[in-house]
Length: 92
Image (cartoon, rainbow, N blue to C red; front, side, top):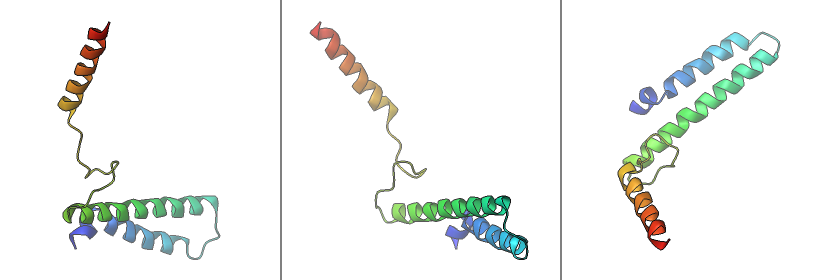
């Protein structure tokens, strides 16, 4: 149940029902198509969030662009860049 409420999946599903009720008896317009497209993107993102959460719980790697992905250590990166600059400077 926690996946439903923490990831926006519940909101995406309920929005889909609202969109369905609002467009059921009306002609298809470009606004309706954009509404459905927006809903599909929202649903896909919510499902992706659930997938990332489950992968992280199981100890599996998650995608780099996921909010749950481990963040790179900035201090370590600065040290690597500084050593590279020092190496280049010493070669001159």
